Amino acid sequence: MDNNISIIGLNIKRIRQEKGISAYRLAKEANVGASTISQIESGKRQSLNTKTIEKIANVLGVATDELLSVEEDVEYIVTDVEQTMHLVLSSDELTLDDIEMSAEEKAQLKMAIEIALNSIRKQRKK
Image (tube, rainbow, N blue to C red):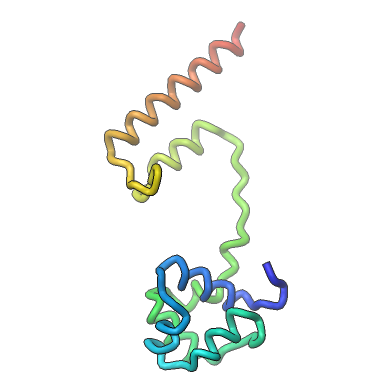
């Protein structure tokens, strides 16, 4: 990660790429210069005015706060495997091989995890 690129530049680029929107299309739909998008994403420009941020956020379909947030740098510390697996399996967008998992597949995975955890617990008691 380039330290010269602002948080907003990193977030615009990440969200734009996640949504499959080209920099050119973003600039055109937000009615801002293509050079503005390029400069903010590359770090040559460090800030944008509020109106421009709002236009970019609207095209990307996100709140302006999402462009300004540093949430990406949040680190989650996992200590309990069982709780973590429950949290993962509760996701509505859980995928395997880029295919969304059905409720039945999640149940199958949950059962396999429970079997493995119970096996580990039994081995520890010996």
